[in-house]
Amino acid sequence: MGLTGTRTVLLAAVVAVLLFTATVWLWPRLAGRGVPRVLARIGALLLVQASLFAAVGLYANQSFGFYGSWADLFGTEDRPGVVVDHDTPAAKRVRLVETRRVNVPGSGAATASGRIEKVEIQGAASRIASTAYVYLPPEYFRSGHRREFPASLVLTGYPGTTEALINGLKYPQTAHRLVKEGKMPPMVLVMMRPTVVPPRDTECVDVPDGPRTETYFTRDVPAAVSAYYRVGDGARNWAVMGNSTGGYCALKMTMRHPEAFSVGVALSPSYEAPIDATTGDLFGGSKRLRRENDMMWRLDHEPAPPVSLLVTSSEKGEHNYRDTVRFIDKVKRLNARGEPTRISSMILPSGGHNFNTWKRQIPGCLEWLGNRLAAPDRRH
Image (cartoon, rainbow, N blue to C red; front, side, top):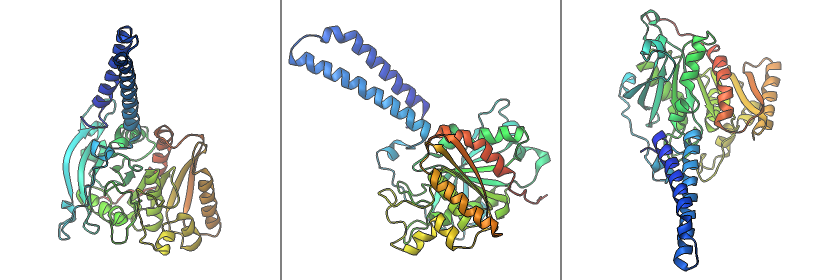
């Protein structure tokens, strides 16, 4: 049973209830003095508390996506990046693993609800391979829509699980509803976790003598997806969106790689990469590389890229509020000088760094994003 599975959570809850009921029922028999009875009461209480802690912890993990598997939880998830042959054609760098229906009202047919495909994307330049869930909208399967679609790379936070983008944050369901309501055009969503070399948090950085995560997301993923699916291959056709660590990645990769993404949406982002036990030394001791990955520094010292950015925060409950306001002000000053970077924001009155806050922001952000991407030229 998977760590994030609903059956696992329900089983833990049932066990907790049964242990609590048994403890209440047997308590009179455990009453009295003597070491055995005292130890029995202590053991019963500890079992009940442990079961309650496990049930609550599993539910919280399922809701917020802290750990994706038992191996991830216990620190035994250490699969390295996969070496990829450079002469593999781009269209063959995506391997289909399984398909699933989209949980939306109505028919389960792909022409009505779309489809989610689990794939493995191999990176020729980065030599990294990672799993993604690709949402294909209903229009993708309709005979009257034989054209290319815009696409958005959607990233979780760290450690995060890709499944949380579907089951927790409900990106495919939200996109489906917005298209049906005429608020955004249909688009392909490539949903991934930024942790492509677990358990290390690379913050989407090309680490010196380490994993080239930034190259993977900015070069390999768009190229492979565009070759395999009917997706545009230009920056004007691609966006990147993410929350927390994924938000920092979205902001950074759009600003550093306007040749890959023309639109970036950052939900509750930080504006520079942290250095801690989960990241290790991301920059090989280079102050220059660290500065170049600091978004505030880039606005002051690097040319403003021709991209559209959206950042989110909350006045109360979000740690990045002041930095977000400072970032917005810096971009607005660039706009006043005629620089091409465009900034938008969504600031809530209150909301913490959690799924509930991001679910309130995602519909408006997807609508904003969808209407800023260009529709690719027709192939047929």
